[in-house]
Image (cartoon, rainbow, N blue to C red):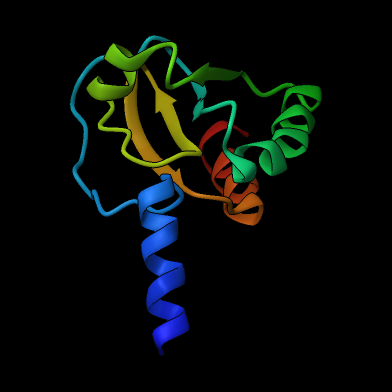
Length: 114
């Protein structure tokens, strides 16, 4: 149990977990597509990149934004952990995926955009 708590604390402090479940009602910077917040240092973001590229190859509109370089936009989306994936329809956030979860990424992409 002690190892779990230490690991959980490290992940939380490193930005790999999210404790925010707020819904969003603001305008997104894209009309329809998948908006992904990452950072250069995030290991899980790097692991997710090939899956994002595959979605692009399949014709999905995927926009990747560095949360450190675009802090104001990240704050508008309440990004407290990366990777943070937002699914946007008609300029509104309809769903999100926080953390490394390729299966959920593909399932939600198909659900909302195909």
